[in-house]
Length: 306
Image 1 (cartoon, helix red, strand yellow):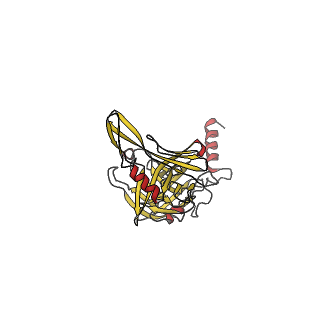
Image 2 (cartoon, rainbow, N blue to C red):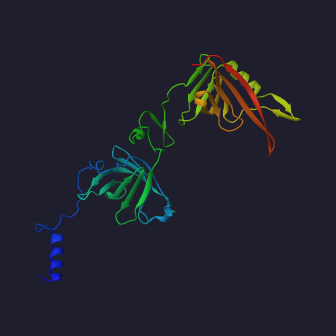
Image 3 (cartoon, one colour):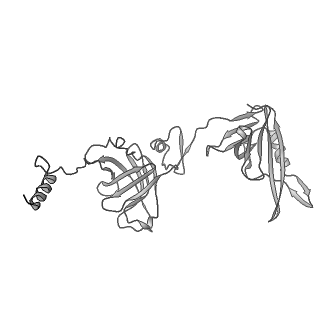
């Protein structure tokens, strides 16, 4: 058998298989995909934002995609034919994860058009890459700022615990309780509700609040300059139903819990001393653009803290 015949026979063998039948075509399975995790593919759940410059992409693509575990989605969608300068179309609908016999993964979106529109997807860490048909692929990144329309959307995106939906963003509503309480609640130190690394001190004792307010209004002279004291930006007087409290934000923990100090000068501090804590509120005054005078607004020692 000459070389030409051998080559043709080999090509025919590879095309039809050992039993003479052509290899099966790749087929999309109708059932919900339950093997994505086994394939090392993380199922997309959460809030994803487009990565890279939108002007470098040709529609269709998403600016924003929210995928929830109840099989619903929210998207800001750039439809085929639209320009990057056009506003995105807000779409809410349902989705289904499918796969092919060859292991390709699809998301079928119902709501993007008259019929369900599908996109292939792959995941890598927090990244999600989508491709609509023959269009160019685009990559989205999972965001820690979880988008919501209602509080239930937060749990549907995998957030544990209790959450509120504030300005379309999930915000934690649970706190671990006071870090410290001094003089029977005269001063309460808590973790900030906004993040895990800041602390907030609230003074509830009317006498202590009045003392600090009076000290913040005093004047003194230094180096020929008259300085009127005032609270720094992180200290706020809050009045509710005629009751004044003093709220001090932006405390950070130092020295293994021995001191809580606000960021940057002048450095208001809450320092442990024996069984108590000392609060020292500091302020600053700039007599000129190249000089600053720092001062102590007031100082108070809380004898017993727990």
